[in-house]
Each structure stands twice: as structure tokens, then as C-alpha cells.
Amino acid sequence: MSCRSKLAELLPLYAAGSLGAEERQAVAGHLAACADCRAELAFWREVASAVAAEDRALPPPSPVLVDRVLASAQRRRANPFARAWALLAAQVPLVRREIWSASALVMALGCVVAILQGGSASASIIQAAAPLVAAAGLAMLYGPDNDPGLELALATPTWPRQVLLARLVVVYGYNLVLGLAASVGVLAVVPPGLLGQVILGWLAPMTFLSALALVLSMVIGTGNAITVALMLWLARGLASGLRMGTVGAPAASEAAVVAALQAYAGLWRSTGLLFGLAAVLLAAAVALAGQSERLVAQKV
Image 1 (spheres, one colour):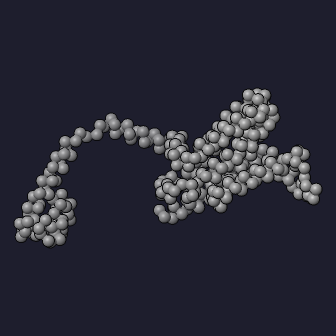
Image 2 (cartoon, helix red, strand yellow):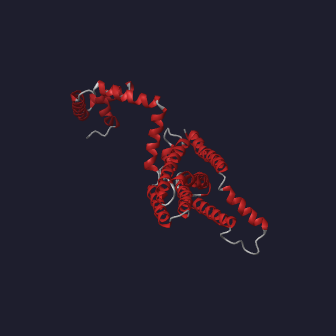
Image 3 (cartoon, helix red, strand yellow):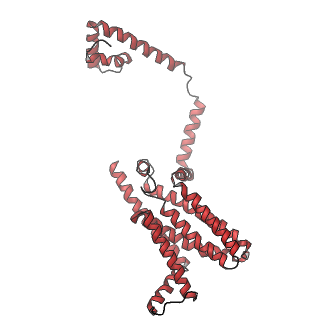
């Protein structure tokens, strides 16, 4: 382009008919006096003609295909189960990949050790491993530390509460399946009639401890949450040992301390209470996620 006029830069838009009335009039006046721009305009008109011809040569989309796509989209909007399934499926690749392999490996090792141990102790191994594995998984479930793309995800129409609940269902459900599989696995050394007792021994503690780890991870970070959950779970084992007499209480221990430890051990055997506390913690996690939701709404 040899012409240095700013109007020469508008020639592609002039050839495409995209200029407003004033700009088009100005370019037309410039073209009357500039041979270089007239030649340039001829080039852009050839380009526009070629693009239009190529566009006309393309076959139109099949009406049947368009109708199918629209119908599928309408069915998904109308079916809440389809939307929920799509949301769950979308969260699976966003969860930290090590959760899946680490949880499966620990539970598999626990099952093998339980079978080799045999006797009543085999059930105790599964009951000790399942809650801790689930707690570690849920502590790595949500937040910028665990999802570098969370801020981008929060900019989509999917609200933070929906993201949290979807990931919770996916990861907790995965650990629930692992726990059930491990419980069935120890039937090799445990009477089948005790299967329900084995499952109840870890189900309520797993639900409570994992919900607690999730809330703590949203408040104090993933690493701290896992540490606290581990300490609470180990303290539960110590307290249970004191109650059962397998671990002798120190001579200088006060009766109030022993009573407190016994009450703490009793907490982990209170199935209804543990489920209730887990529900409260889940509500707290949803509320914390709601803070992110309000921030997104303010930006929008």
C-alpha cells in the first residue's frame, strides 16, 4: 500500500460494505483522487468476491442434524438428572489425580494386611483406614491450592456451591465404594454375618472426619487440615485403647482426663451424632463456598 492516508486503512471494510455513512463518504471522496487506493480497492473486492463464492460453495448444515442438536440441548435443560450427571462428569478430571490412585492403593494394602492378620483385628484395620483415606481425599477437594483453574471455573455459569457439591459426591462416593470393596474383601477371614457391623464401624466416622477435613481445608489449608484430621483420628485410637484397657493410663493421670478420653472415644461410636455433625459441617462448607459465589456475582 503506497498511499499513506489513514483512509487507505479502511479499504477492506469499504469493500465489505461495513463502514458507516460518514466514513464511506470520506473513503469515496479519497478514491476519486487516489489511483493507488483505487487499485488497492480492486484487490480487496476480488478477495471479498472469492470469500463469498467459497461460502456459497459450502453445503448448508443438515436441518436434521441441527434439529437433533437443538433437541438434545433442550432435553438436557429440561432433565435435572442429565444436568447433574454432566456436572459430576465434568468435575472428575478437575479433581487432583493422585486422590484416585493413592486412595485405592491405601485401601488395597489395608485389605491385604487385614486378610493376612485374620481374626477380629482384620475388621479394625479397615475401620481405621477408611475414614483417614476419605479425610485426606476431601481435604484435597476444593480451593485454589488444589485447583489452579478454580478462578476460571468460577467464571462459568456453574456456581461454586455446585462445584463443591459435585466434587464432594464424586470423591466421597469413590471412597465409599473403596470402603465397601475392602469390607467385602475381609469376608475371607470375617464371618459374613459381621459384614454390616464392619461397614457401620467405619461409615459414620468416615463421613464425619472427611466433612471436618473438607471444612478445615477451606479455612486453614490442605496440609494443616490433613494433619489435624490425622491427629484427631490417632487420638481416637488412644482413647479407645484406654477405655478398653489395652493401654494403661499413666499413673499421674487425673480421673477427669481419663473420663474426657473415654467420652471422646464414645463420640466416634455414636453413629447418629457423627452423621448429624457431618451434616452441620457440610452446611458450613457450602456456606464457605457461598462466599466465593457472592464474589463471582459481584464481578458479574
